Length: 460
Image 1 (cartoon, helix red, strand yellow):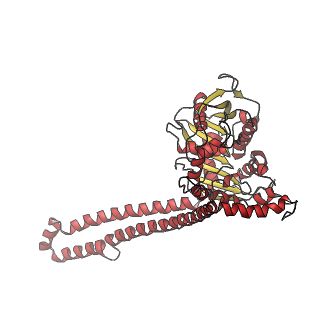
Image 2 (cartoon, one colour):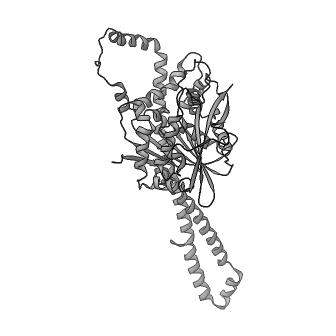
């Protein structure tokens, strides 16, 4: 098997980690500057020590020599005072370098967002003209006079150029803001939150499949064999994703891992969207629907997230037990939001690790105590639906790979795209990947595993 080529950013070997290293060096330099200044101050106190001054009467030459050498050690070109000032200046310079680089990155992102917003607003302002031009362009197609012919593979064209999706989503906030009576929204989460108002998130109910005592899944190797790497994690996610079918209740599993020391860790497999309901449709009984998509993209806690927390409680997880959330598509979005809410009423569990496959989580704010591994197929348009790249941070590793299957669904599939990539990633020696793997030992070095399955329902 030929491993896919990976483009890895963030994590222990990323730019964000190097910024953190420079920041630590700046703090250390500042601390050293303060310590040297304190020693220098005590040394200057010795210069006027009464006993030393009294010795000048008995040995004036010796007194003068001691004073001169002490002054040189304190205030000479290489003295403590100069060293203190030098380390202080270095701390300031290091902080300025980091701030400058970060400001450039932020300004570049703001410029792109602003241009997209303006394009969307202008499109909205000229909708009548746009529709008129569109009618002229579409009319020949209706008459059979197509511009490109009938053999154009539009799915292949879109997945070969997924950046188009970034731009289409990116103009959304400006377009919505241009509509009569619409509030001003400045970014994609704001636009998603506005659309989420048309959906009723409702409440939730959690049902143990097979009953509270009989909900252990023993039908697949991923549910009975402790995971040892990324492929095992995605294999379990793929199995649950396949079981959580369209038109059926939302289904997750909690893999309870028992470690050699007797400790317990919990892995939650969260499938993606299964109900593509538009805002004008009746309220959905399924938590894995479009309403959850736009709500979580808007940065809000969802009933699906609360239901997952209840499933963890039912599986026996305690507030301090380590939890890994593994999610595909919407599942990864919910996982990232749960990590943001970890330890709060929104998700009262100790999320330490997140793995996402094909999830748009660039806007998700994940605390530094949570390690995130995001897998993204370059030809999968779904991770582009937030119109932004994942941030390069020491605790967030993004792995981008190439897997062109020729269709939107196959490029987004856990089995067709993400499982082969995870298998290749298990052999990676990249420092960021290796650091993530090492940090996840409580999930990947277990002696046994038991998978408990839960159906999640929306209630009104």
